[in-house]
Image (cartoon, rainbow, N blue to C red; front, side, top):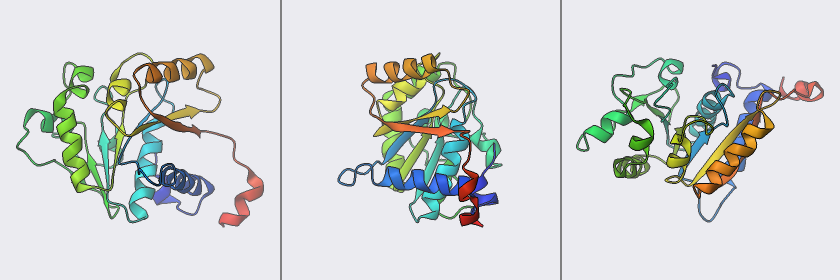
Length: 215
C-alpha cells in the first residue's frame, strides 16, 4: 500500500482521490455523511489503500477525520501509518470507560484508531451494541469517521457494520473484481438494508492525455 496523496500530491491519482472526496461531500448536502464504511467484494482489491488516501484528502480539506481499522481479521492500517496495534477499537469495546486510543498521524486533522487485539468473533463484535457506543464517541470527536471493513463476500462483517453507518462505499478493482462477486456483494449489502452510496474503481487505466495538466 502507498499513500500517494502524500508522496505525490500533484499526480492524477491524488487528484482522483480529491474528486472522490468532493463527490462524497456533495452526496447529501442536507444530511452529511458522518460515518462511512469502505469495503470490497473480495480480498486484495484496494479498499485499504483507497480509504487511507481518502482519509488524507478529507483531513487536508480541514475536516477532523478519524480512520478506523475495522478489518479485525487482516488489519493493515497500523502498518501503513507505522503505529503500534497494541490497543484499538477492540480495546474500546472491552473497556467502555477508557478514552479512544487514537494515534495522531503526520497529517494534520487525521487520527487513526487501529484494530487492536484480534477478537475470536469479529462479526459478533462489530454487530454489538458496544460498537454503537464507540461510533457515538468517535463522532463526537470528528467531522467524519471512515471505517475500513473486511470484504463482503465470505464474511458478514461489512454488512453488519454497514448497517450501523451512514453509508457504504464499494471498491471495485478494474480487471480483477469478478462480476459475480460484485453483484453478490451488492445483493448481500442490500439484504442487510445497508445504504450503498456508490462504488469507486481502482486500478483503472489512466488517460495520459491529461497528465500534463498536473505537472
